[in-house]
Image (cartoon, rainbow, N blue to C red; front, side, top):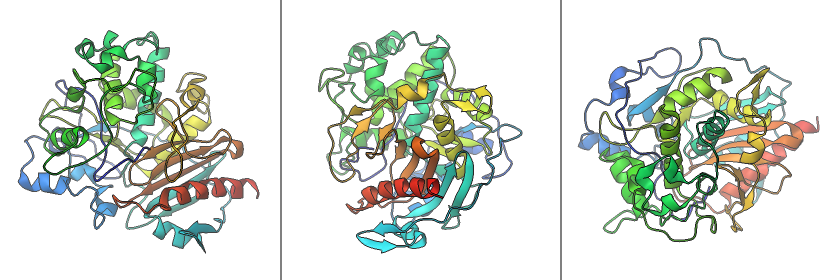
Length: 420
Protein backbone atom coordinates (compact mmCIF):
# COMPACT_ATOMS: atom_id res chain seq x y z
CA UNK A 1 0.00 0.00 0.00
CA UNK A 2 1.38 3.39 -0.92
CA UNK A 3 1.55 5.34 2.30
CA UNK A 4 2.60 8.85 1.19
CA UNK A 5 1.53 11.23 3.97
CA UNK A 6 -1.25 9.55 5.94
CA UNK A 7 -2.64 11.09 9.07
CA UNK A 8 -5.92 9.25 8.80
CA UNK A 9 -7.26 6.25 6.97
CA UNK A 10 -7.49 6.27 3.22
CA UNK A 11 -10.88 5.42 2.12
CA UNK A 12 -12.87 4.48 -0.56
CA UNK A 13 -15.71 3.91 -2.59
CA UNK A 14 -18.43 4.45 -5.16
CA UNK A 15 -21.19 6.86 -6.11
CA UNK A 16 -24.58 6.98 -4.40
CA UNK A 17 -27.97 5.52 -4.98
CA UNK A 18 -30.81 4.63 -2.65
CA UNK A 19 -29.89 1.63 -0.52
CA UNK A 20 -32.17 -1.24 0.40
CA UNK A 21 -31.97 -1.91 4.12
CA UNK A 22 -30.29 -5.27 4.63
CA UNK A 23 -32.14 -7.45 7.08
CA UNK A 24 -30.76 -7.42 10.59
CA UNK A 25 -28.69 -10.48 11.42
CA UNK A 26 -27.50 -11.84 14.71
CA UNK A 27 -25.46 -14.92 15.54
CA UNK A 28 -21.85 -15.11 16.59
CA UNK A 29 -19.85 -11.93 16.54
CA UNK A 30 -21.34 -8.47 16.96
CA UNK A 31 -25.10 -8.12 17.14
CA UNK A 32 -25.98 -6.24 13.99
CA UNK A 33 -29.14 -4.19 14.41
CA UNK A 34 -31.39 -2.64 11.78
CA UNK A 35 -30.90 0.81 13.28
CA UNK A 36 -27.13 0.53 12.95
CA UNK A 37 -27.33 -0.82 9.41
CA UNK A 38 -29.68 1.94 8.29
CA UNK A 39 -27.94 4.64 10.36
CA UNK A 40 -31.33 6.29 10.69
CA UNK A 41 -30.10 9.82 11.33
CA UNK A 42 -27.22 12.05 10.33
CA UNK A 43 -24.30 11.71 12.75
CA UNK A 44 -24.33 14.13 15.66
CA UNK A 45 -21.28 16.01 16.96
CA UNK A 46 -20.29 13.26 19.40
CA UNK A 47 -20.35 10.58 16.72
CA UNK A 48 -18.39 12.78 14.31
CA UNK A 49 -15.79 13.37 17.03
CA UNK A 50 -15.45 9.63 17.66
CA UNK A 51 -15.08 8.88 13.95
CA UNK A 52 -12.18 11.29 13.74
CA UNK A 53 -10.40 9.15 16.35
CA UNK A 54 -10.45 6.00 14.21
CA UNK A 55 -6.65 5.86 13.97
CA UNK A 56 -5.86 7.43 17.34
CA UNK A 57 -2.96 5.22 18.51
CA UNK A 58 -4.29 5.26 22.07
CA UNK A 59 -7.47 3.43 21.09
CA UNK A 60 -7.14 2.06 17.55
CA UNK A 61 -6.56 -1.51 18.78
CA UNK A 62 -10.25 -1.20 19.73
CA UNK A 63 -11.73 1.09 17.07
CA UNK A 64 -10.44 -0.95 14.11
CA UNK A 65 -12.52 -3.92 15.29
CA UNK A 66 -15.66 -1.99 16.20
CA UNK A 67 -16.47 0.04 13.10
CA UNK A 68 -20.09 -1.16 13.26
CA UNK A 69 -20.44 0.94 16.41
CA UNK A 70 -19.05 4.09 14.75
CA UNK A 71 -20.20 4.08 11.13
CA UNK A 72 -23.20 3.05 9.04
CA UNK A 73 -22.60 -0.24 7.31
CA UNK A 74 -23.88 -2.83 4.85
CA UNK A 75 -24.13 -6.45 6.00
CA UNK A 76 -22.64 -9.42 4.12
CA UNK A 77 -24.27 -12.50 5.59
CA UNK A 78 -22.53 -15.84 6.06
CA UNK A 79 -23.98 -19.17 4.93
CA UNK A 80 -25.83 -21.35 7.42
CA UNK A 81 -22.92 -23.81 7.45
CA UNK A 82 -19.33 -22.64 7.17
CA UNK A 83 -16.62 -24.53 5.37
CA UNK A 84 -14.22 -25.80 8.01
CA UNK A 85 -10.60 -24.77 8.19
CA UNK A 86 -8.97 -27.99 9.41
CA UNK A 87 -6.20 -27.91 11.96
CA UNK A 88 -2.70 -28.95 10.93
CA UNK A 89 0.41 -29.71 12.98
CA UNK A 90 1.35 -26.76 15.17
CA UNK A 91 3.98 -24.46 13.72
CA UNK A 92 6.78 -23.31 16.02
CA UNK A 93 7.10 -19.69 15.01
CA UNK A 94 10.61 -18.71 13.94
CA UNK A 95 12.74 -16.04 15.56
CA UNK A 96 12.04 -12.55 14.26
CA UNK A 97 13.83 -9.23 13.95
CA UNK A 98 12.23 -6.25 15.64
CA UNK A 99 13.94 -2.92 14.96
CA UNK A 100 17.29 -4.66 14.54
CA UNK A 101 16.95 -6.95 17.57
CA UNK A 102 16.36 -10.71 17.50
CA UNK A 103 13.19 -11.58 19.41
CA UNK A 104 10.66 -14.37 19.77
CA UNK A 105 7.20 -14.27 18.20
CA UNK A 106 5.45 -12.83 21.26
CA UNK A 107 7.78 -9.85 21.43
CA UNK A 108 7.52 -9.36 17.66
CA UNK A 109 3.71 -9.46 17.78
CA UNK A 110 3.54 -6.87 20.54
CA UNK A 111 6.19 -4.70 18.88
CA UNK A 112 4.40 -4.73 15.51
CA UNK A 113 0.99 -3.76 16.96
CA UNK A 114 -0.69 -7.11 16.32
CA UNK A 115 -4.36 -7.74 17.10
CA UNK A 116 -4.41 -11.20 15.53
CA UNK A 117 -2.32 -13.46 13.28
CA UNK A 118 -3.08 -16.74 11.53
CA UNK A 119 -1.01 -19.08 9.36
CA UNK A 120 -2.49 -21.56 6.90
CA UNK A 121 -0.26 -24.18 5.33
CA UNK A 122 -1.83 -26.15 2.48
CA UNK A 123 -5.25 -25.11 3.77
CA UNK A 124 -4.66 -26.17 7.39
CA UNK A 125 -4.44 -23.86 10.40
CA UNK A 126 -0.97 -24.28 11.87
CA UNK A 127 -0.83 -21.13 14.00
CA UNK A 128 -3.50 -18.76 15.37
CA UNK A 129 -3.08 -15.94 17.86
CA UNK A 130 -5.50 -13.33 19.27
CA UNK A 131 -4.45 -10.32 21.33
CA UNK A 132 -5.89 -7.21 22.99
CA UNK A 133 -9.23 -8.86 23.79
CA UNK A 134 -9.84 -9.77 20.16
CA UNK A 135 -11.48 -13.17 19.62
CA UNK A 136 -12.21 -15.58 16.77
CA UNK A 137 -15.64 -14.00 16.19
CA UNK A 138 -14.45 -10.36 16.17
CA UNK A 139 -14.70 -8.57 12.81
CA UNK A 140 -11.67 -6.40 12.02
CA UNK A 141 -11.41 -3.60 9.48
CA UNK A 142 -9.26 -4.64 6.52
CA UNK A 143 -8.82 -1.12 5.11
CA UNK A 144 -7.38 -1.48 1.58
CA UNK A 145 -7.41 -5.27 1.62
CA UNK A 146 -10.96 -4.50 0.48
CA UNK A 147 -9.50 -3.42 -2.86
CA UNK A 148 -8.36 -6.97 -3.56
CA UNK A 149 -11.88 -8.21 -2.82
CA UNK A 150 -13.18 -5.66 -5.35
CA UNK A 151 -10.86 -7.17 -7.96
CA UNK A 152 -12.35 -10.59 -7.29
CA UNK A 153 -15.84 -9.22 -7.97
CA UNK A 154 -14.65 -7.58 -11.19
CA UNK A 155 -13.26 -10.88 -12.45
CA UNK A 156 -16.61 -12.52 -11.81
CA UNK A 157 -18.49 -9.74 -13.62
CA UNK A 158 -16.14 -10.15 -16.58
CA UNK A 159 -16.75 -13.91 -16.68
CA UNK A 160 -20.52 -13.36 -16.45
CA UNK A 161 -20.45 -11.01 -19.46
CA UNK A 162 -21.68 -8.09 -17.36
CA UNK A 163 -18.41 -6.34 -18.22
CA UNK A 164 -17.36 -6.93 -21.82
CA UNK A 165 -13.65 -6.19 -21.46
CA UNK A 166 -11.20 -4.73 -18.98
CA UNK A 167 -10.10 -2.51 -21.85
CA UNK A 168 -13.51 -0.86 -22.03
CA UNK A 169 -13.71 2.77 -21.02
CA UNK A 170 -15.01 3.36 -17.50
CA UNK A 171 -17.53 5.76 -19.05
CA UNK A 172 -19.14 2.90 -20.97
CA UNK A 173 -20.60 1.73 -17.67
CA UNK A 174 -20.75 5.04 -15.77
CA UNK A 175 -21.62 7.82 -18.26
CA UNK A 176 -21.49 10.40 -15.45
CA UNK A 177 -17.69 10.04 -15.53
CA UNK A 178 -17.32 10.74 -19.25
CA UNK A 179 -16.19 14.35 -18.98
CA UNK A 180 -13.36 13.91 -16.46
CA UNK A 181 -10.12 11.98 -16.23
CA UNK A 182 -11.87 8.70 -15.50
CA UNK A 183 -13.77 8.97 -18.77
CA UNK A 184 -10.43 8.67 -20.58
CA UNK A 185 -9.28 5.60 -18.64
CA UNK A 186 -10.03 1.91 -19.09
CA UNK A 187 -11.14 -0.42 -16.34
CA UNK A 188 -7.76 -2.17 -16.52
CA UNK A 189 -5.86 1.11 -16.10
CA UNK A 190 -7.97 2.02 -13.08
CA UNK A 191 -7.44 -1.45 -11.57
CA UNK A 192 -3.68 -0.97 -11.99
CA UNK A 193 -3.84 2.42 -10.23
CA UNK A 194 -2.86 4.13 -13.47
CA UNK A 195 -6.03 6.12 -14.13
CA UNK A 196 -4.21 9.43 -14.58
CA UNK A 197 -6.75 11.18 -12.33
CA UNK A 198 -5.52 14.24 -10.46
CA UNK A 199 -5.63 13.00 -6.88
CA UNK A 200 -2.92 12.23 -4.37
CA UNK A 201 -3.39 9.70 -1.56
CA UNK A 202 -2.29 12.22 1.05
CA UNK A 203 -4.44 13.05 4.04
CA UNK A 204 -3.57 16.60 5.00
CA UNK A 205 -6.22 18.06 7.27
CA UNK A 206 -6.31 21.51 8.86
CA UNK A 207 -7.02 24.84 7.16
CA UNK A 208 -6.04 23.67 3.67
CA UNK A 209 -7.06 20.02 3.47
CA UNK A 210 -5.99 17.87 0.53
CA UNK A 211 -8.65 16.49 -1.79
CA UNK A 212 -8.28 13.05 -0.20
CA UNK A 213 -8.82 14.59 3.23
CA UNK A 214 -11.88 16.45 1.99
CA UNK A 215 -13.35 13.21 0.65
CA UNK A 216 -12.65 11.43 3.94
CA UNK A 217 -14.28 14.12 6.02
CA UNK A 218 -17.32 14.60 3.79
CA UNK A 219 -18.08 11.02 2.78
CA UNK A 220 -16.93 8.99 5.80
CA UNK A 221 -16.90 11.21 8.86
CA UNK A 222 -19.81 13.55 8.12
CA UNK A 223 -21.84 11.32 5.75
CA UNK A 224 -22.61 14.35 3.59
CA UNK A 225 -21.62 13.07 0.13
CA UNK A 226 -20.74 9.80 -1.51
CA UNK A 227 -17.11 8.92 -2.05
CA UNK A 228 -17.27 8.42 -5.81
CA UNK A 229 -19.08 11.72 -6.34
CA UNK A 230 -15.65 13.32 -6.18
CA UNK A 231 -14.59 11.40 -9.30
CA UNK A 232 -17.10 13.23 -11.51
CA UNK A 233 -15.30 15.80 -13.67
CA UNK A 234 -11.96 15.37 -11.91
CA UNK A 235 -8.92 16.68 -13.79
CA UNK A 236 -6.09 14.67 -15.29
CA UNK A 237 -2.50 14.61 -13.97
CA UNK A 238 -1.06 12.02 -16.37
CA UNK A 239 -1.96 10.02 -19.45
CA UNK A 240 -4.02 6.95 -18.49
CA UNK A 241 -1.79 3.91 -18.11
CA UNK A 242 1.44 5.88 -17.92
CA UNK A 243 2.08 6.37 -14.22
CA UNK A 244 1.41 4.39 -11.05
CA UNK A 245 -0.51 6.54 -8.58
CA UNK A 246 -2.15 4.71 -5.69
CA UNK A 247 -5.56 6.27 -5.10
CA UNK A 248 -8.57 4.93 -3.24
CA UNK A 249 -10.77 7.04 -5.49
CA UNK A 250 -9.77 4.71 -8.33
CA UNK A 251 -11.27 1.77 -6.46
CA UNK A 252 -14.38 3.78 -5.65
CA UNK A 253 -14.86 4.20 -9.39
CA UNK A 254 -14.46 0.44 -9.84
CA UNK A 255 -17.22 -0.10 -7.29
CA UNK A 256 -19.45 2.26 -9.23
CA UNK A 257 -18.68 0.34 -12.44
CA UNK A 258 -19.58 -2.94 -10.73
CA UNK A 259 -22.93 -1.71 -9.49
CA UNK A 260 -23.86 -0.20 -12.85
CA UNK A 261 -22.72 -3.24 -14.84
CA UNK A 262 -24.42 -5.84 -12.66
CA UNK A 263 -27.44 -3.90 -11.40
CA UNK A 264 -26.64 -5.13 -7.89
CA UNK A 265 -25.25 -3.54 -4.78
CA UNK A 266 -21.71 -4.36 -3.76
CA UNK A 267 -22.73 -6.04 -0.52
CA UNK A 268 -25.18 -8.28 -2.41
CA UNK A 269 -22.51 -9.18 -4.96
CA UNK A 270 -20.00 -10.11 -2.28
CA UNK A 271 -22.54 -12.08 -0.28
CA UNK A 272 -23.91 -14.16 -3.15
CA UNK A 273 -20.80 -14.56 -5.29
CA UNK A 274 -18.01 -14.94 -2.73
CA UNK A 275 -19.03 -14.97 0.96
CA UNK A 276 -21.64 -17.71 0.69
CA UNK A 277 -19.75 -20.08 -1.66
CA UNK A 278 -16.56 -19.38 0.31
CA UNK A 279 -18.20 -20.95 3.35
CA UNK A 280 -17.43 -17.94 5.52
CA UNK A 281 -17.83 -18.57 9.23
CA UNK A 282 -19.22 -15.17 10.21
CA UNK A 283 -21.05 -12.25 8.66
CA UNK A 284 -18.87 -9.43 7.39
CA UNK A 285 -19.77 -5.82 6.81
CA UNK A 286 -18.81 -2.87 4.64
CA UNK A 287 -18.64 0.58 6.15
CA UNK A 288 -20.93 2.88 4.17
CA UNK A 289 -20.59 6.46 2.93
CA UNK A 290 -22.91 9.30 2.03
CA UNK A 291 -26.17 10.72 3.33
CA UNK A 292 -28.60 8.58 5.29
CA UNK A 293 -30.49 6.19 3.02
CA UNK A 294 -28.30 6.81 -0.02
CA UNK A 295 -24.83 5.71 1.05
CA UNK A 296 -23.03 2.81 -0.53
CA UNK A 297 -20.55 0.18 0.57
CA UNK A 298 -16.99 1.47 0.85
CA UNK A 299 -15.36 -1.04 -1.47
CA UNK A 300 -11.85 0.40 -1.32
CA UNK A 301 -11.23 0.48 2.43
CA UNK A 302 -14.33 -0.53 4.34
CA UNK A 303 -14.75 -4.29 4.56
CA UNK A 304 -14.63 -5.98 7.98
CA UNK A 305 -14.26 -9.72 8.62
CA UNK A 306 -12.96 -12.15 11.21
CA UNK A 307 -9.39 -13.42 11.12
CA UNK A 308 -10.35 -16.86 9.80
CA UNK A 309 -12.59 -15.40 7.10
CA UNK A 310 -9.82 -13.10 5.88
CA UNK A 311 -7.68 -16.27 5.74
CA UNK A 312 -10.34 -18.04 3.69
CA UNK A 313 -10.02 -15.26 1.10
CA UNK A 314 -6.25 -15.82 0.98
CA UNK A 315 -6.75 -19.56 0.53
CA UNK A 316 -9.26 -18.86 -2.25
CA UNK A 317 -6.54 -16.98 -4.12
CA UNK A 318 -3.91 -19.62 -3.41
CA UNK A 319 -6.28 -22.27 -4.82
CA UNK A 320 -6.87 -20.31 -8.06
CA UNK A 321 -10.41 -19.37 -7.09
CA UNK A 322 -11.56 -22.84 -6.04
CA UNK A 323 -13.32 -23.78 -2.80
CA UNK A 324 -13.18 -27.55 -2.71
CA UNK A 325 -14.74 -28.67 -5.98
CA UNK A 326 -16.57 -25.34 -6.49
CA UNK A 327 -15.15 -22.67 -8.76
CA UNK A 328 -15.77 -19.27 -7.17
CA UNK A 329 -13.38 -17.07 -9.16
CA UNK A 330 -12.90 -17.55 -12.92
CA UNK A 331 -10.08 -19.87 -13.90
CA UNK A 332 -6.87 -17.88 -14.31
CA UNK A 333 -8.28 -14.70 -12.75
CA UNK A 334 -5.96 -14.84 -9.74
CA UNK A 335 -3.03 -15.06 -12.14
CA UNK A 336 -4.24 -11.87 -13.83
CA UNK A 337 -4.72 -10.14 -10.48
CA UNK A 338 -1.19 -11.07 -9.42
CA UNK A 339 0.67 -10.30 -12.65
CA UNK A 340 2.71 -7.40 -11.34
CA UNK A 341 3.76 -4.19 -13.01
CA UNK A 342 6.68 -2.29 -11.39
CA UNK A 343 5.53 0.63 -9.25
CA UNK A 344 8.86 2.46 -9.33
CA UNK A 345 8.84 2.54 -5.53
CA UNK A 346 11.97 1.53 -3.63
CA UNK A 347 13.11 1.35 -0.02
CA UNK A 348 11.16 1.34 3.23
CA UNK A 349 7.54 0.39 2.66
CA UNK A 350 7.68 1.19 -1.06
CA UNK A 351 6.40 -2.06 -2.50
CA UNK A 352 7.92 -3.01 -5.88
CA UNK A 353 4.92 -4.25 -7.85
CA UNK A 354 1.18 -3.85 -8.30
CA UNK A 355 -1.20 -6.02 -10.28
CA UNK A 356 -4.97 -5.67 -10.35
CA UNK A 357 -5.71 -4.22 -6.88
CA UNK A 358 -3.10 -6.60 -5.43
CA UNK A 359 0.48 -5.98 -4.25
CA UNK A 360 3.91 -7.50 -4.67
CA UNK A 361 5.53 -6.68 -1.32
CA UNK A 362 8.86 -8.54 -1.54
CA UNK A 363 11.15 -10.47 -3.84
CA UNK A 364 9.76 -13.92 -3.03
CA UNK A 365 8.97 -15.65 -6.36
CA UNK A 366 5.24 -15.61 -7.02
CA UNK A 367 4.28 -14.14 -3.63
CA UNK A 368 1.55 -11.50 -3.46
CA UNK A 369 -0.53 -9.66 -0.88
CA UNK A 370 -3.65 -7.79 -0.08
CA UNK A 371 -2.52 -4.86 2.07
CA UNK A 372 -4.43 -2.38 4.21
CA UNK A 373 -3.59 0.71 6.20
CA UNK A 374 -2.38 0.28 9.79
CA UNK A 375 -0.83 -3.14 9.15
CA UNK A 376 -3.52 -5.34 7.59
CA UNK A 377 -2.13 -8.15 5.41
CA UNK A 378 -3.11 -11.28 3.57
CA UNK A 379 0.28 -12.60 2.43
CA UNK A 380 0.20 -15.54 0.00
CA UNK A 381 3.38 -17.57 -0.62
CA UNK A 382 2.51 -20.10 -3.36
CA UNK A 383 5.89 -21.89 -3.31
CA UNK A 384 5.18 -23.16 0.22
CA UNK A 385 1.36 -23.18 -0.03
CA UNK A 386 1.23 -20.68 2.83
CA UNK A 387 -1.21 -17.90 3.74
CA UNK A 388 -0.36 -15.46 6.54
CA UNK A 389 -2.99 -13.01 7.80
CA UNK A 390 -2.04 -10.20 10.16
CA UNK A 391 -4.56 -7.74 11.61
CA UNK A 392 -2.91 -4.77 13.27
CA UNK A 393 -3.24 -1.34 14.83
CA UNK A 394 -0.22 0.56 13.53
CA UNK A 395 0.09 4.18 14.64
CA UNK A 396 -0.58 6.83 11.96
CA UNK A 397 3.14 7.66 11.86
CA UNK A 398 4.86 4.30 11.45
CA UNK A 399 8.48 3.59 12.42
CA UNK A 400 10.59 3.13 9.27
CA UNK A 401 11.50 -0.45 10.22
CA UNK A 402 7.91 -1.61 10.78
CA UNK A 403 6.57 -2.58 7.35
CA UNK A 404 9.83 -4.10 6.01
CA UNK A 405 10.15 -6.10 9.22
CA UNK A 406 6.63 -7.46 8.95
CA UNK A 407 7.00 -8.49 5.33
CA UNK A 408 10.34 -10.19 5.98
CA UNK A 409 8.81 -12.18 8.83
CA UNK A 410 5.92 -13.39 6.67
CA UNK A 411 8.39 -14.99 4.26
CA UNK A 412 10.31 -16.48 7.19
CA UNK A 413 7.10 -18.02 8.55
CA UNK A 414 6.31 -19.57 5.17
CA UNK A 415 9.76 -21.09 4.87
CA UNK A 416 9.78 -22.35 8.48
CA UNK A 417 6.54 -24.18 7.85
CA UNK A 418 7.77 -25.72 4.63
CA UNK A 419 11.01 -26.89 6.30
CA UNK A 420 9.26 -29.05 8.88
